[in-house]
Image (cartoon, rainbow, N blue to C red; front, side):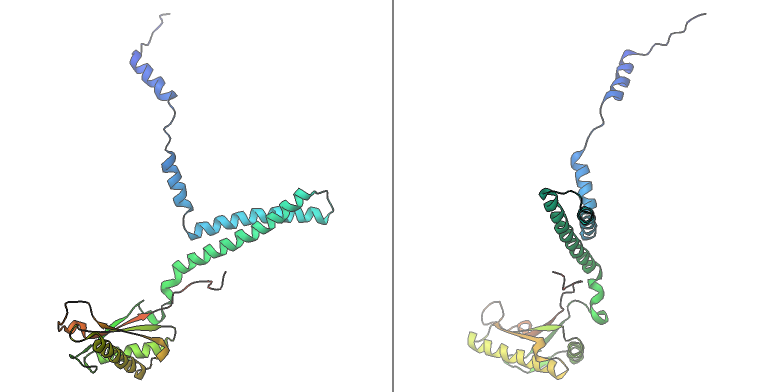
Length: 234
């Protein structure tokens, strides 16, 4: 019988053996980043704390069962059991807090009443040296006043300015009168005084002794309370 020989080039053989024997390349930073990403966020943290709480609670329950059956135990077992019960409670509370923060992220936008946006802007303009409005949207004032009446937890910052003509003292007084005018307009339309935070700021920033209609203004910005699930959870 004739024997057949198969010849493999030496270079090919070495490359094949090297490929088989070379360890797979590690990428510890990438894998670590992936794991951290998987564990990130309030929801995942809530689950992790809950898992630890369950483990510690099992340890405490097991010790309690042994004690009730009067099994042998020593002072180290006693402290371990008490520590396990304490840690179970701590991790359970941490889990609830993380879950509440996650719920707040998910639900907060749903708690703006009647489809309201988080801030509403409006403005009232005044003539030179006057505290009597000459330009404003009356229906906007009416809507804002009614909205404040229906939502007592919402407040408004009223900020009044003047242009840079005149003394600082006279402009401060003028901005106070303008702010009071707008405050009274909102109260007339349903707002409560305690909802209105008046800031009379006097001269606006800009070149001195310059008449500027954009500075003879009172602006209004609504402030909505921050929503939080489980607000009583400490």
